[in-house]
Each structure stands twice: as structure tokens, then as C-alpha cells.
Length: 259
Ligand SMILES: C[S@@+](CC[C@H](N)C(=O)[O-])C[C@H]1O[C@@H](n2cnc3c(N)ncnc32)[C@H](O)[C@@H]1O
Image (tube, rainbow, N blue to C red; front, side, top):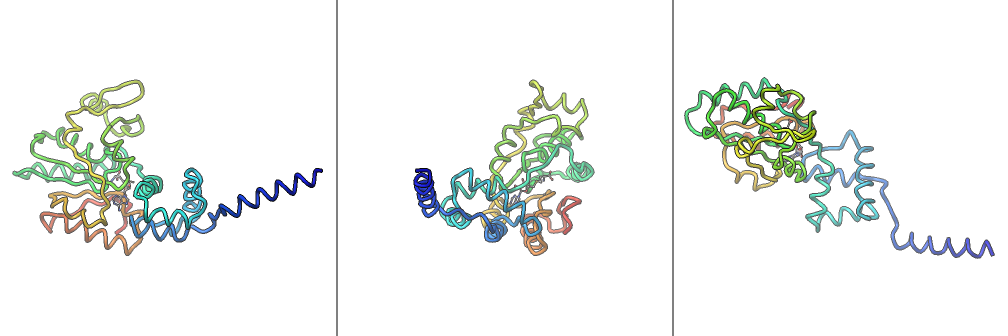
């Protein structure tokens, strides 16, 4: 009797396995796909990618990496979800502030309207920091516009909401926090007067449409190149350089970006 049930159970399990064989053993092709699409490399972190891609698939009942690859070609929603899941968005207000101070000094000398781009902006702390620092230095709000772009839609939704935690504002003085945020429980909510100075756009710097954003007086591109390999850094640098109004103007890269 026992063996009859065991046999039946085994047969059912075998049938299920035949229908949906799972295979999460090798994420090499996912890594290639992701690098081609976003520039972000997992070459030195294949174990991390393997685990993350497996979790991503299991959460969506996708039975194998090859099925995921098929879906990525046909399903824009899954593609965006994978991008949101695999990109790293760590950022905070007044990060590497010396560069922001340098920018403020330059903008103060400019006479006409100044266009600034943060590529990437992640959850908004960098472009908002620039806006705050410019106002603090006495630059009038109608003298500059800031555009933040990023490939991660979750990050941009957070940027547009502009609701932050203590760790995001840890570099800001109490005076600045009081002037530009209001507090609700443990949250720091940016005031509309600052939010209105920054626009956000979901875009990949490697997409042809990136060039249609126009030309900018100043470009910040900090802590994105750290996720690119050497070849991709060269490609990305050229794309950003072509977005400058003035070809002599340097681009502000992060200290960890190693060009
Ligand atoms: C660590 S954050 C840097 C944010 C901010 N610039 C800073 O330094 O604090 C890196 C951001 O780069 C974005 N990113 C990666 N590849 C991108 C691409 N090809 N196009 C646009 N954004 C990209 C990620 O989504 C992520 O939000």
C-alpha cells in the first residue's frame, strides 16, 4: 500500500517536473543581456547576480533563466522590473559636497539661465542638494533648471515624492533641514519650493533618445561609472561629453568612478 502511494506521488512529481523543468544554474546570458542594455556589469559578482536573478524568477514563477531571457525580449514591464531590481541606488544629500560647492561658484558667475543635468539622479538627493546649495548661496531660483535622469523607475518615483529618512539627510545641518523640509513622524519631506526646481525623466543614457534631451551647461555623473567596465566607461563618457553646451566644461564624476 505504502509503495503504491509513493509510486503515485513520484509519478505526479515527475509529471510536474516534466512540464516545468527549473534551471537557474547559469546567469551568464542574463549578465550579458544586462550589460548590453544598461552598461552595468556583474563580471566580478556572478554569484550575486545568480542569486538575485533566481529570486527575481521565483517571485514571478519564471521557471528558468532562458525563459526569463525570452520574456525580456517581449515584455517591457518585466524588463523594467529587472532593471529596477538589479541597479544600485545608494545616494544621500550633500554627498561629495566640495563638487557641489565648485558648481555653485561657476553658476554664480553665469549671466544667463543655467541648465544642469544629474545623470544619474537615483532617488533625487543629488539634484535637490544642488538646488538647495544654489539657493543657500543666494542664486535666484529663476536662474537655473535641473534635470535628473535615471534608468530605475522605482528610484525616480521616490525622487518625485521626495520623502526621505534620517540617513538620507545625515549630512545636512539642522538649519538647512528646517528651511527646506518639514518633518512628519520620522520622515523628512522636501518642500514644494525645492521640488519644483527639479524635473525627472526615466531614460537610459545609452538610448538614442538620450541625445534629444538637449545640451547642458553642467553635467553631474557621479557613482554610475563604478558599475561599468572599462569599455563601457569610454562609451558613456563620450555620450555625456556630447551633451555639453560648452566642450571645455568638465563633467563632474564621482571620486570612485575611476575613468
Ligand atoms: C549609486 S546611484 C548614484 C546616484 C547619485 N549620482 C550619487 O552619486 O549619489 C547610481 C544610479 O545609476 C543608475 N544607472 C545605472 N545605469 C544607468 C544607465 N545606463 N542610464 C541611466 N542611469 C543608470 C542606477 O539606476 C542608479 O540609480
